[in-house]
Amino acid sequence: MPVSRLVITALLIVSALNLALMVPGGFVETRDFSAYPAVVLGAFNLFLTVLGLGSLVLAYFVAKTGKGHGWACLAGFAFVAVYLLDLGRIFPVPPNPMSTLLATLEWTGTALGAALAVSSIVLRRPANTASVAGPVVSTPIALGLVLVALIIIAFATKSAMGL
Image 1: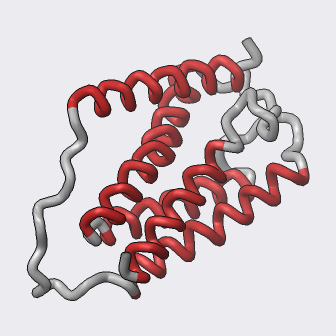
Image 2 (image 1 turned 45 degrees about the horizontal axis):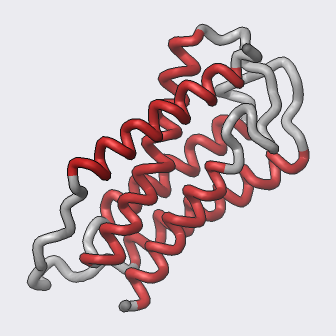
């Protein structure tokens, strides 16, 4: 596997795993977000779940085809934005403070997201390179991912609301 594929694939996977560690109700994210309406939390958790699972799917795609650098760059910027909004106490803003471990993971995620965005731009392959059709996600796998996403969203929203 070329270095560019390996770097971007690794950054996508590590970024997704880092994000997964911070699911509300898990070991790290224990803040109370019950002041937010369920719809707001659900939408936010939908975004985070799509970012996390989408990064894993994108990692597979990049590893197999070497394409998807633009999407990887966008994911990198999304990771950076999510973490900086939370670290800057812009959104979401719970009444209780962030733990040291959570802050450390968010700063790590910010660095990983920035590295992903920059790597995706710097390691982009030339536009005139011939490409091969990329892998297609089968229907059972796609349905499985949707089911996993719904479970994650429901769990994270319920946990964030303190239910």
